[in-house]
Image 1 (cartoon, rainbow, N blue to C red):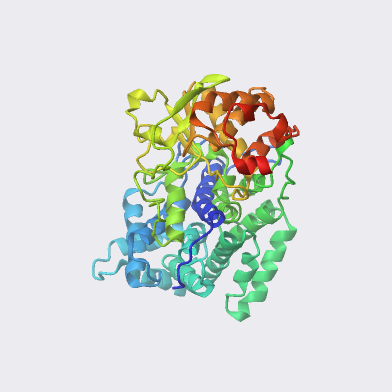
Image 2: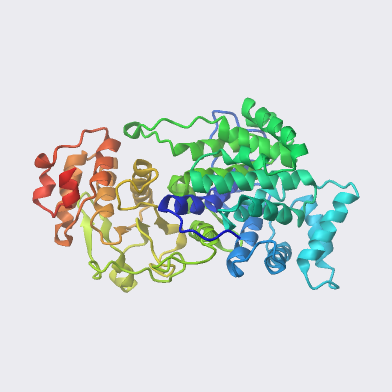
Length: 526
């Protein structure tokens, strides 16, 4: 294994996005699997149904099996996936899922797992799966379905700095149920695409993945990728076949234009994740699988911060997994289950800022159903915090605000440091829209960050913008309301508020709110 290096904040965001976006693609595709193909004018929604039938936002076997791998990778010591203990943990999780949690299962996967289930002569379940899978392929039975590609994403996160090790692991985990070399090749290509995207924030890793294959198969795969880049996703209708599924997913990603950022018109480059996943669903046939495959790579490129808030709120599935869990699993795998200095993402209680240890809360000046505050509010008795939904703009512990249902506790990936947000306009807008959406449902919402001084007022001001308040008035009124808490407004986040409204930001000397609050000195210099 390569030596673990400390990921950047952007790389953490992208690692967090891999399983989350894959699950969102899966849940988005569930209602349309094997049904008439959606037209370009129809927008897929997480409405549930499908082959399960599934609840709205519930993902299928694609993500269920990925979670089996992910949980094995965080439950074992950080050694190579090829280690028999790790591989056996994955195999055991597959078998447990097969007997207790599978809501749907592909024919090839079922064939292998059903035979292995009854073999008690071998103590290592991974060796039984490998034997059954390889025997099936050697006998000429179909073994190139999508069952291994759809679940491969966690493997890509485990050893981010070693492409050869990742490729070897991807093929071996594929072989547990799908021993056809084409299935293994597809997993190698896609894992390299994901691994590279997490590190570099581009899609070039897919082509680099082809170079990790045996030389005699590289030209064939480059041709398949060329075809995908030249044709729309629906032109690969046999997407129950691993090669066609990869082509459909790659087509959806590469043929969906990346929007040019125009915050004032609500257009963001990060929208590429959503638009490409919608295109993947429109491929038709095995819609959830194609979209899950595409989602893993899109999440690796764009990050958790690019996943729409309402998707994050809805997505869930076996075994009682939510968006928060998917984010945590992705980060933990990429960190080889080692938390950072603050214990994130494993700590039950995230450390409070030393200068913000006391709870602080105040009503939003333009909507008293929104409470503005800080993270120490999680320490209050729920009866003293009269909210039933929370939008967190900072890291929180797994037990912070535990009385709020997971569905109503949204965590928006916003960093209070200029230049640190991969999609700052989009993320700030999503935070405000999350508050707006929850309020439309009649929820009483807490909007908070660590100290309640920078992210909170800017997200609150953007929410005011959604209510029709101009940004200068919004910033003035919000900062006045928060003035006892001494807000220090991050100049970049403040600028995002004005950009989103399509309004020029006034010079520092003309900003009324500066006379009513403590201004971050860095802001004045800018």
